[in-house]
Image 1 (tube, rainbow, N blue to C red):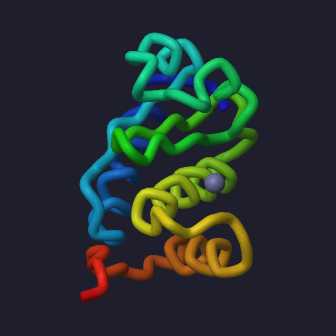
Image 2: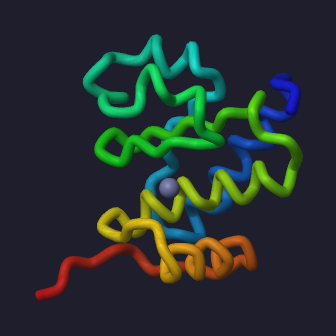
Length: 120
Ligand SMILES: [Zn+2]
């Protein structure tokens, strides 16, 4: 997709809406591989020079996500990618798999998630 200010604004609005539903603090969003490279190295460690390969990356420890707009083909994939990254933020210990994908689908349908709470 083409990176322009309207689309960036739209993504930030969507990020706000989903962050709210998932009860997570709104992450900072990066839109280009260059922005990833320009961040302090310790924030993007592990997925820095390789970030351009992915539709999206979440940097959980730093409440930061990368949405690779130029690589994403259409709006549907854009929303999938955004929700995927935000599910990582909300369910930080969950890795990819059936349960993860189910949560992404629920998120896309508008489901709300309570704030993460450590078990007592
Ligand atoms: Zn993922």
